[in-house]
Image (cartoon, rainbow, N blue to C red):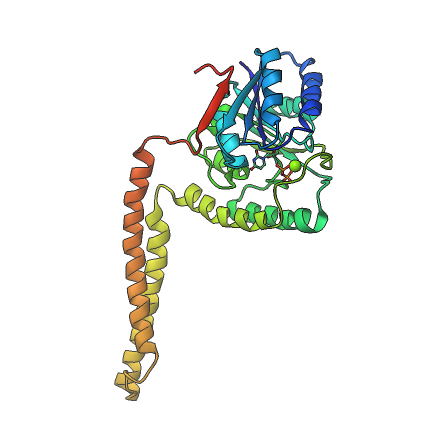
Length: 316
Ligand code: UDP
Ligand code: MG
């Protein structure tokens, strides 16, 4: 199997017929074996029934994984990747905001020798104030913090070589950070503009609050990518800095006492010295605990972040 398209689906029944039509239109011109893995993320409408009927008609290409409840887009994507078999994985939204017709362009770009081609919704058709603007700021911050410069982390439509998706699990809103993980394992990354359409049916599951979550996730990602093997570097540096502050402040009190005869106990610097010292010491101890956790984390079994009700056309 060459190409796996992974699509998370949550209450998208009105979009699915058009989506299938667009996928078949694109795939009939493609000269490689392909499959589409749909992950029904606990839809409450009849999305699952629709997916099921297509899967029955075309067991060669259409696979469905259905969650017991709504676990979120990231978990759905993770499951889709887990149950796909292609060497190349393309992620796509189910709501027809992404255009399946862009897939061959992404694949051609991969062929040029890239491991990851990131779609960029250059002309984005979402709410300018609540979505596009916060997202632009978030993209700038993420690029700056991680050193992986992309215009559109949030665009689901991206193409990946499977190798760069292996070795990490996705939590929270983390699917958008795949390029950061991929870059940390040495992937060659590029981006290319893709089409974007307004949502015609159903409604978006997100608002501005997602930007906040994304920024919080960024802390975790930065920590995991840069320090997950060595948390003591972060905790130890912070702790060392605080202990240094404590030493400077104590030295200052000492010099004042000896040469200028100012009483030590009247100065607020004394309790601050103690505080800096305790915090610094604590931070170093926490770093050591984190080092132990990291070892458990890396050595424990891989646990999925979802439970599955049903699998259709999936070979274990
Ligand atoms: N989605 C999902 N689970 C969720 C929320 C969304 O599987 O809990 C799917 C949704 O069906 C769509 C994609 O993720 O295929 C993107 O969602 P949406 O269009 O709401 O996001 P937006 O385009 O507004 O960022
Ligand atoms: Mg959408």
